Length: 148
Image 1 (cartoon, rainbow, N blue to C red):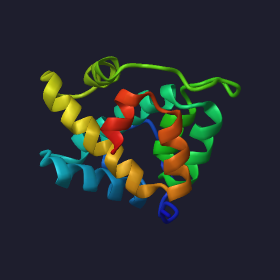
Image 2 (cartoon, rainbow, N blue to C red):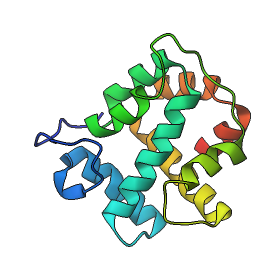
Image 3 (tube, rainbow, N blue to C red):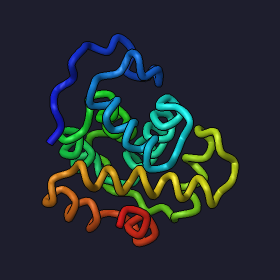
């Protein structure tokens, strides 16, 4: 479980880590270290883009449940993508990665896929096991393999 933010974030959509909560900085910092990214800001942009797309492939109810375990700024990425009564949406791995690639620095599809995979694996580590199981049940098979 994550700790609450240490400061208010006046603009939760601003990828400037200086304006982010401690938990967002921790999540993005882990992404940065795992991938060897140059800046935390780059890691935060990747994380937001990945969770933005992830929020589109899970049901709105599950997205809402997952927000409890995430930094508030990232919770908004999940919740903001769907209507409150939406169901999970099937999407292929290539389409998912392509959607993320439009927001990140890399244009290499294989590199973006590797980055997305690491963000989703970190997400899995941050979630309670019961949420992980429910999430994996809802995801299309191609996306499940990215998260395992």
